[in-house]
Length: 299
Image (cartoon, rainbow, N blue to C red; front, top):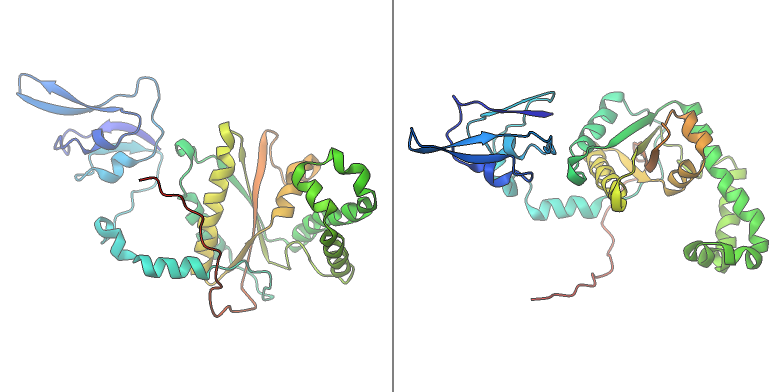
């Protein structure tokens, strides 16, 4: 989306765009001959982050723009708190579960597109909208990726007897897991399931979504991925779909360039999230409790 300027026929010079523009590209300019102020837009240095705040707030739709879809207008935009009351929203948030049991049912492209559309409108640092997606619905491709990711468990189990020797070379978190007695139990259990023909990575989900993007400072791209995929998970829930973020697949794709090439992920891009979608084969009846927050108030 590119901001072109202001339609003088529609502009009432209310100054709302001046207030909300984070890049300060709107200004009130004096017109002595008319004895009034006129709002003007100037972006000589291409500083606009294309956030759309000016479009969203203008009461007369006077902002001119191109290369974008139409703004969203609907009854209730001025009272969003009444559109989804807090109590209703919190119930939906608490009832969202990670789903690992799916029906043998294809998710139609239309439904997947709706999930992607929700992710499209997630906020991002400086409105970069830096993300790209690969959507896998081909069973062979999903099975291939599952096998590739499953190799991690086999490798980890082979190296476990040498954990004392390799511990000094591991990151603190990996070292703790390697030395934890529970790790052997977990690996043995998962490998037994794998040998039994189970999909221990994607749980036979009919759709796998890979989220990838270029890097930018201070880890903000990872934050953006988390927000976008959370939007997707909540949208999936509203469509009767189950979802789950698959960390093992994300890590494997990050570390193996051969896999990235297989899915045509360009060099310089990093996989920051892997999401599975499908129709749940189970129905949760209540939201379980969570630990209380640790909060310090500074007043």
